[in-house]
Image (tube, rainbow, N blue to C red; front, side, top):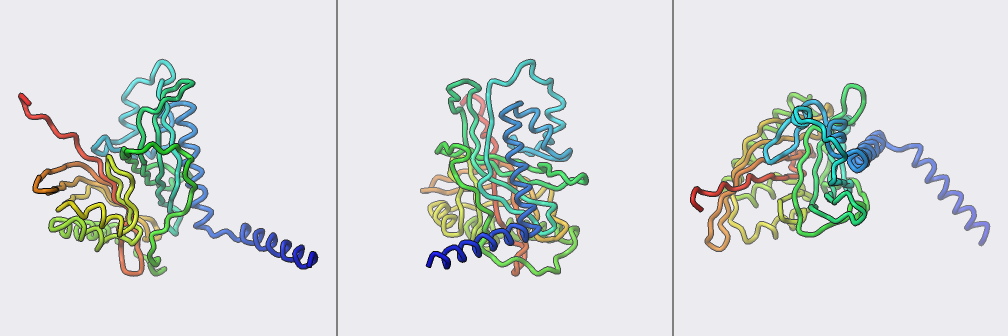
Length: 307
């Protein structure tokens, strides 16, 4: 019996060793992306967000404030602080995905902003969503970054990492060329907007993957078709959108778009309108392009004169 257990253990160790040596290119690339995200956060803690963002954003990378702005151009136009910032921003990826070509991917997870003091008092928290693109030198750089505030404070690192599961079948290997893929994403965006004009819930359930993510300010991430159904059940919501940019991986299986949106809600007979900007990630599955994630950055309503 002991010999059998030893043999079984040896076989298990050998299998684990072979699995590690035979890691798929996509798995290796995903790991490199996640490690880059963690290095980005560590630099933010050690040197401040300005230096970290300048180091990890692509030249054309944007963050949402709430509109998409060129991050490096904006930061470079501002003088560097004379002393270390008194606020620390840190985050951790809890899920991520990459294209088969290994040139485009995304990460998401909780973030927290704290005082730079021994007490480290939390000042703000939420979830971030970042799209990354491989550069000519082989490095990962941020091309789009957006965040949403959440009611609950989740400490970075409190959740274990797991690769994204969109609960769908990957598309065929004969993926379109990037230019065609971007055109197809824009067509999917158009369909999304047309459906959304009649009902946001129908648009998300029709265009989304079974594992679709909605990130909304003031709410925890909504993950999965049933959660989306519950989230929008008591809202007669409609949403139209207009993309400003779309890009796709060389393998034509992962892409993103961002732009502006107008959403209207009629909850309990009280109609309201919300305007802002969005970031979406699309994945090409066996039945075409499907929406993986939809994150919004609403504009702050303007106060009427005399109000």
